[in-house]
Amino acid sequence: MSIEIADESEEARKPGWARYLPILVIGAVALVGAVVLRDVLSFETLRDNREALLAWRDANYAAAVAGFVAAYVVIVAFSLPGATVATLTGGFLFGTFPGVVFNVAGAGVGAVLIFLAARAGLGNRLSRGMDTSEGRLKKIKDGIHENQWSMLFLLRLLPVVPFFVANLLPALVGVGLVPFVVTTFLGIAPGALVFTSVGAGLGAVFAAGETPDLGIVFEPHILLPLLGLAALSALPLVIKAVKGRKEAL
Image 1: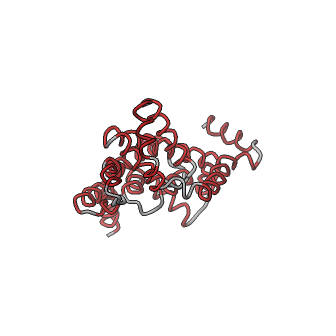
Image 2 (image 1 turned 120 degrees about the horizontal axis):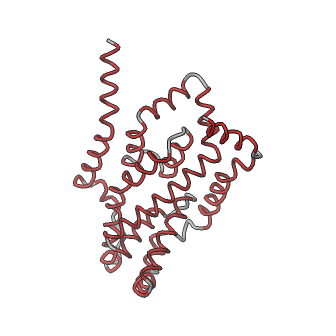
């Protein structure tokens, strides 16, 4: 309790702009990046520079891995365009394995950074406001906290919201760091594996002068296992709802 009070008083002493600085910086960089990098972080850029990238990887493998992961972290942390292209690039440069490991590392660390920035800027204050509020807002927050592991896994396994929203929303309702980290790294792994494997086959796609078929994710042998994982994550929610209905009868 004393630590919590100390944290709150320290936050209260900060000027208003300082509390919002992390999320404001992310928003500003994301806005600039959406305009400046829209045509840079693209499939065409990867295709046109593929030989140079492969030569650089072969000559400096460790530096290529570090540079790639760092670039992916920046793309996700600042919500820049090109995350899908980055995942394909990881497969193209490093193969399905260890490419999927590098992709999950970059995306996961970037997601954690934006989560922490949002929590520092808006999350703690908004979460406390929900605690003291009544009605629908408090019910939403309580519902998420009661089922946070299932809800967080579903956000990752079913891309019903953009990736950056799935990073911000948990911070704004006061989700803990450990559940966020665990569900993020585990939840994005299946999808990352699919797109990394597509990226690993880009050499043949480039040679044929074609574009990658990202619709593969909707093929039954890919989609059904992903939906199965999502259903497994949703099972505790279903069981709790059924129990609650029986108790109400």
